[in-house]
Image (cartoon, rainbow, N blue to C red; front, side, top):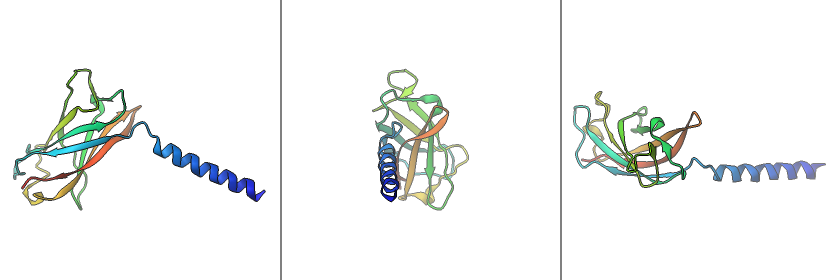
Length: 140
């Protein structure tokens, strides 16, 4: 009896590991920093996110969310504009999103030269799914 329980455990573990590695919502992004430094005012240019890899059908523009997380602070959601090259209202491989700081000036010159985590999410079947994450080094 112990052997069958052990076998069942091993099968479940392998199946779980396989499912975790085969998620269709996983993707890859790259981030290109704006060349201008952050100021003490809002609406500074931040970065452009490019979808390097993602699901073939793309991600609906309506549900895109970008999050920036400065070290030791809460995540910030900048104002982002998708560059939907083919006009199909989806963000697909090789398309991008350009982001600027919101008017509240949540990011400032004290972050110059620091590396921040940037994440791109999409709404898929009503749930927030990660497309990918990368690092952004703030311009000096």
